[in-house]
Image 1 (cartoon, rainbow, N blue to C red):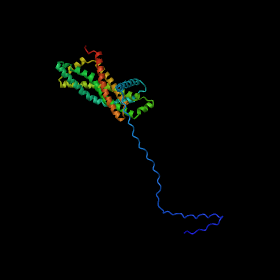
Image 2: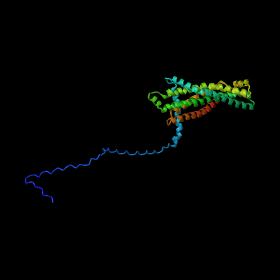
Image 3: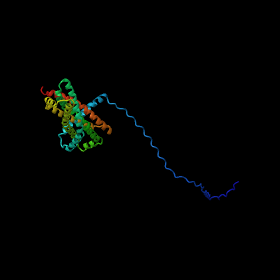
Image 4: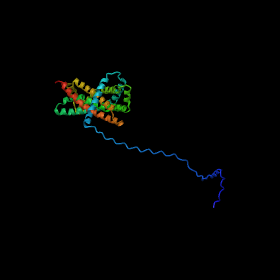
Length: 313
């Protein structure tokens, strides 16, 4: 039994209870508290696939017409800006030297076999018909009127035109042309006009060289391989050829050079798809130029034969 504690006398407050001794806890080394981890960001949702938009059939059919319209618009702009000042003479000289440098040697090398093939074929046909004396006139007319302008135009479109298209296309994807427009400089007047004029002048000059080289090649092969007479070759040439034959050849070369420069500039100013689009534009410019050249050559030849009468007719 617990002994009874003494009670305080009546009228006095009870003494406060004795404080309890603090309880010691064993010292345990606790690691420092870590900051709560941030909640993980939710995974991004996959992009919603866009429905494939198909152009209507009418729009796809009209796309070539739009490109043709833009091509003619660029040609009209170039023809107008030729007479605007200031004229970029330095750029014109640089482009002329470049286009001539990449086309003059191939043109000379290609014109020799062209003249030889034409002379051999025409000489064989005239020999079968008993008119071998007309070999010179027929082969020279074929070289001057048809082969020479086409050779020049094909080489300018393949060598010079592709370089022009690649240059303008690379400037376009680097946004240099947009920067020129922001500064108030016309890219057509500054870059396109000198290049088109350079291709036209090179085409006219190369046409004369190809005509001479092709004629000499045809003369050599006809006289040496087919035992032709040099006097008959030259006499038939002077009897059938006339000065308008040379004029139509130079006019064809001038128009073909203009077409090659315009098509190359048009495709270079409108590339699609970055650097790969520039390569595609170069291929397209060469193919389009070839198609236009043969079509325009057919039209010019038909007009010339209707307007200019044959010599002695």
